[in-house]
Image (cartoon, rainbow over all chains, first blue to last red; front, side, top):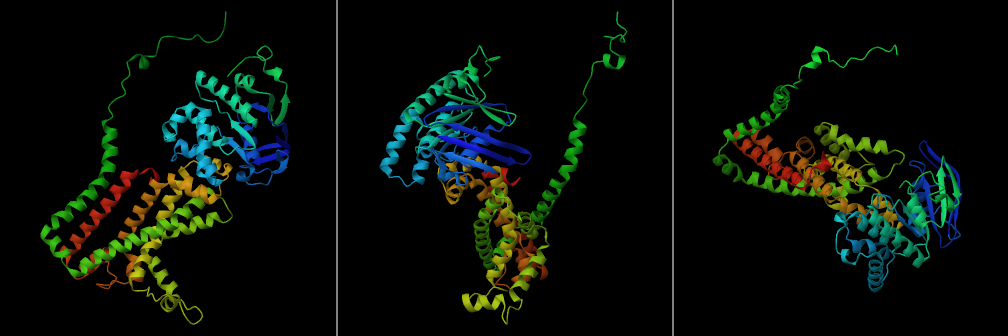
Length: 227
Length: 287
């Protein structure tokens, strides 16, 4: 469960004030909004990379407003993926488990399981610098899921992918969420993505975050179906 | 139907003629001439050195026990000061690049002082630092009493004088290196449960290896060229604190021009080898 209570975030001239949001457990929520509205800022506030001026961040009922990013147990896939350029794919999947001092056998099993679910078994030994867009997305997703996080945050994860890859990854995201039951917040511009995935829809507009009915995503109710 | 001015589709005579952009030769002549004059100056200096000396002078200079000792001390002291520089510059460059804190501008300014200060002043400042009275003693006496190390006018002074300048350049290089590394990967590593130390060691440092090699070679080359601070703080005692830069000075002062030029060319070769290493590992971080 992800809850934001009256969050205010200031960063230079940019400010988001009194933002509230509640995503029930085991729900796939989609956050939409124009460029520069502060969608990424909200994700960063949830995972602790940006401190909030006031308000509270609750994950699964615990107040984590002042917790360090590493203590929150948030799986985060940033927009630019930010893969570790000097590591192999296997290194990415192992990283959070090594940090948690998991046993070698446990790490091996978890990496095999993730690689199978994400379809990246053949890439494990490769460095990440030469992966395709879709492959990189899978690695970033695997790295975020590896340590069984409390919640999953995805920042425009399907941007800049061709349509076929995007459809496959949409399917993958849906099935991963069903299997893990993870509360997920997915930021996107794309109505198509939102329609395919959202169980709950939030829209950030002019500094106001509001929940909208899913029917709003219906092609007939929308002015267009821009992607 | 409209009283707007009539638009003509016939071009004025100047535009009717086909346009030619003209020659680029004057551009290259002027730019190349101005820039090339500096390149020419360096080539001319090296050529003059080469013309002045001969393999016989080289052999004669290199067979002198004082110069052999100076070569050994130069290699050892430059390597130690370069390693010390990188050991200090990597954490300092990382902290300055990643964190903004009160007084950072002051640290930035302080670090640049050895870069802009006349080298002689650094030597003088080191000399004063080690001999300033401290409650009936001084730093030099403390070093001798507790560590059994004589600093001033001895080999440690050579290393310290080289380090004082070389480290400033190494910090600049390491800071630019870390500035050029995207911080997002480090932020994601924090969300994965890492402490900052692990983020530094496992994510930032492996990406900075080219910068580390560049900073190491720059620190080594700066140490090689250091003369003023060494002369003041370590002295120019033959068979003791003589490094190659002091050799050139000493040979010159006793009228041994051939030996001075031979040693100078040896230093040119060493500097070129170092610059070659920097070019090989990529110059992106130091430009």
